[in-house]
Length: 352
Ligand code: NAD
Image (cartoon, rainbow, N blue to C red):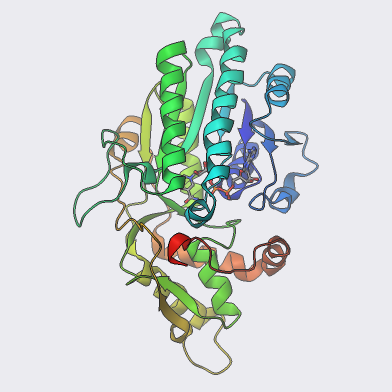
């Protein structure tokens, strides 16, 4: 398959691009290389003729239309986004620009391209939009999000993703575009920008800095190892029903404090502190994130029963793999940190 991927220099996108190329697909990868995009994550496929990289913005109509007509892909997978909740608290406008305006532009270009395809190719074409469980808002102590749960986004990030999901839905219903949407829980694994909880804690621990836990540390997320998310996307792309949405989750609900302690104990055995103490001694509780959602949990029954997908990496295994990757790729981390981000706290908004 020839796939146009957007945001393929980011965390999940780069993992997906590697997987797709290994599986024999051709990938046209368009990425704006924002602070979160890192071409170094694609180094191993730099010279691979199955990977065509294009530095550009999904909001650029001419560029996207040209890429579609030049490469004639059978599918488009949209990862490109502003993705960090804390940044959306400090500056929501960038999230509206890429996640809403950019996605709308992409949809319009893809619709026009798809309409002009000959009939067999038109039926087989798919537009897959990668989204988040954060569109559903926050849960109490019980229950989980299904595809029927009403949207109730609480952060500017979640609101911008919910808007993009609605646009995707509308393009299917209004124009018949064969769309698919995946709403996935928190991902972790190689190539994640170290502003997100797991790589942030690994880096701060190694540098001897305090490990900040928002609020009481008891907010719960459902964690999914990134390669399992990528296989879910492949399954949905290959066999998902056009117009449908699929929830994707890892059956791995953990309180933030439990995640941080797990990182500390793995580091204690793999890279012990020189003073012999535990990294857990660096944990500090800090003021909570404004509007911090308490709990997310995914009911992934639909993708499991309809498409036979299952997560294969459990949390304990995944956290070990992730920590080892960061220990082995400190040069990658240093290069991404050469930019403006310096592991500082952002996103306190009016509480700052
Ligand atoms: P990321 O921030 O690591 O990567 C985003 C990529 O998009 C970067 O390479 C960036 O350069 C690129 N980009 C940003 N604006 C662009 C634009 N206007 N045009 C082209 N490229 C642009 O994000 P991620 O964590 O890999 O997330 C990828 C997608 O998956 C996002 O849509 C996100 O909402 C969704 N998602 C993420 C998670 C998670 O836990 N990380 C969970 C569920 C869903």
